[in-house]
Image (cartoon, rainbow, N blue to C red; front, side, top):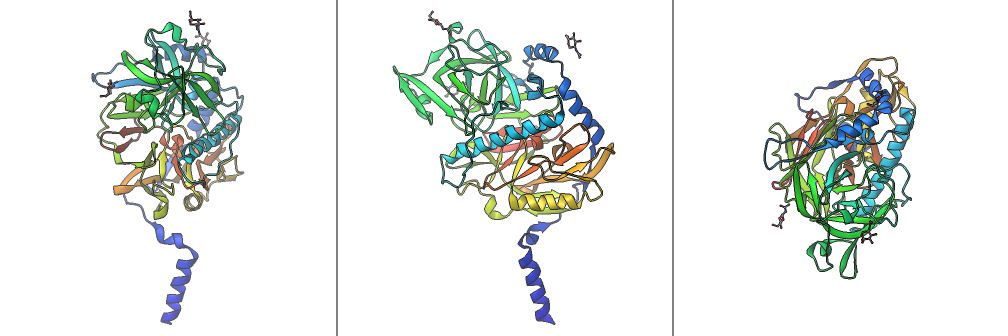
Length: 469
Ligand SMILES: *[C@@H]1O[C@H](CO)[C@@H](O)[C@H](O)[C@H]1NC(C)=O
Ligand SMILES: *[C@@H]1O[C@H](CO)[C@@H](O)[C@H](O)[C@H]1NC(C)=O
Ligand SMILES: *[C@@H]1O[C@H](CO)[C@@H](O)[C@H](O)[C@H]1NC(C)=O
């Protein structure tokens, strides 16, 4: 009898090696969460009707006052409030967002690929006309300042704006920055430290030229200069930025990009910021939040170590050790956690919308979620989402709670809106995680919405403060 039992155990264990990595989450985490279906659908109808003229005026008053003298604060807006969606239905808006999101993920994978072995075979596509960037802030460039909407990007370091004269500029909502109108515009020499730090640079008549290419076919090329950048009432001088005369691709609407990555040329690094943080408002909301520099971490933040990749300093990694769904906690297999080569790990990114999970992790999480939602009507897959529901007859539903479990036992419990999202205005909702074959997993902005994400660069910590936009 005994050998039979042993054999039985071996078979069970062998059939499902991942069963070993399943446990139960701590008791204080609620097993279920309520999703307000009616309110979510309402937002999908509103986002198509934002009053742009009102919005633009509000954005002009973009600086926020701050009580602390060292803190810098900028308003942060969703894409929907900057650029009126051209879509008449929320479904087509969703599909274009997902297409843009795929291009974004390819960009990240390709960007990191140049520093590593060739496993990341991501197809290179030409820039779509969708435009990239989900969140924006407005800064002033030059002296006197020219207002410029900038895409916020934690996945890259170099900040740049489109610059006159344009060899090629895409359409933007503000006038294009003309260096002739700025007294603080100074080209950097090829010998300058900033120029030497560029990955891709050239020298012309002793002046430094930069190039940043994004994996999806978009790029910006121009002079690498120092300029004054104004944030609210504060003017920061001699910030190295790209003055792009030849710009192609995905940044439609914005004047340029604010590189918030972890490298030496990034905006926070040049400001010598000890911290920066953002709180991403709902992508369908025209309300605003803030991007802050040098503000202390909120006292109630869930803090976890900020990890780096020793070969690629741009990305911010977190040690995600598990994901719980309802009363099941799935531990991430050890090999998938490391940020160093062979390039696993979890990057936290402001520009990717939907969290990408390694296939084996995704499948555990999805299966558990499906098990916990058997009472809900299933709907057909929508684009990259394979788990969807027809909630058209409901005003609210109870769903399993999804939480991220970080190293040190720290838990970030997500709101139902962070993982069950509307894809149209008639009640179809999808489970908002996507499976990836790439070794790199990405925590995207749908999962970060409503949470202030703080990067404590001085102490190498990331803080998550839910419900604090
Ligand atoms: C949008 O704003 C303009 C100007 O403030 C106003 O005239 C118009 O009635 C508004 N439209 C809607 C739909 O609120
Ligand atoms: C800047 O000024 C120079 C000299 O006056 C002029 O040749 C050039 O066209 C101007 N550039 C732009 C973009 O206005
Ligand atoms: C950051 O520190 C460097 C080196 O100490 C200094 O040159 C630079 O002016 C500082 N930048 C700001 C914005 O304070």
